Length: 151
Length: 173
Image 1: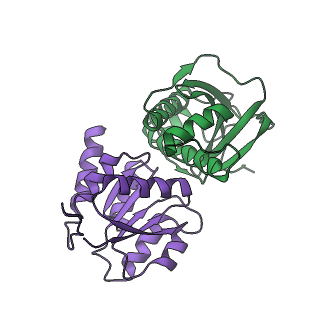
Image 2: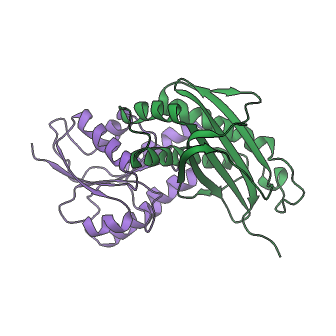
Image 3: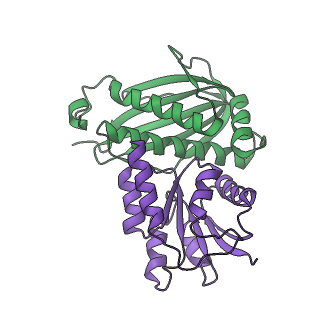
């Protein structure tokens, strides 16, 4: 089982730690983390080796959605799942992140391990390997379904 | 209901924050702290903060082009320490940068909930980045006398206050 290279982007150190701790506790896979404190920092640290991105929205200098758009505009990045982990909860924001920003899934803070596990199960198989070419639409459909049920 | 039905663009004659917004914020506080700590904090009637506080205050705004709703989450030292235990899995030092980071993040999560709930009563807005003040003998003054409200909550980890101030986003000529 090879390590999955994850980029964790959040201006809060506490939240970056919480994301990493949750991923480690879930033991779905072995992760190797790169951390970034905002979108600009994340763009500098982004490389072809990154396999999955956990991304906050509300950050100084460059927001998560701006970063997500920039990554998608690079081209040949559609296979990299971008998981928004953010306090923004309104339907308009979710729609913007998933449809305009190019994110694949949306988790709202404060998140639970189950929520993260549910999202990751679309991208990581039971042996902890990264699933290339996963159905990146399922996360969007699932989130909207949950939101509609909740409302 | 739309925003113009509960709140005019010009706030010069508005003396109180509309009840719909206060109720929306109160619900947001209860949901946010319940999701963080696992138990819903109780709202304390007439629970204003009279005495100065030794603690930490998270400031954040939810705003649109017409109005700005400022949230000030005032957390006494002991409550903040309890909050750090449930949020981080361990108590973090009150004087550390991490404590400021934590309260900023809690304010950010609360603002996200407030923005989503306030949207339901017509206040569509976005949240700012949080800022945090820590100190002793802290007391909030609002010298320009915008419409304000203060709510006290009592949770499993201790009490805290949420102060609100509503103002126009731009001063009209």
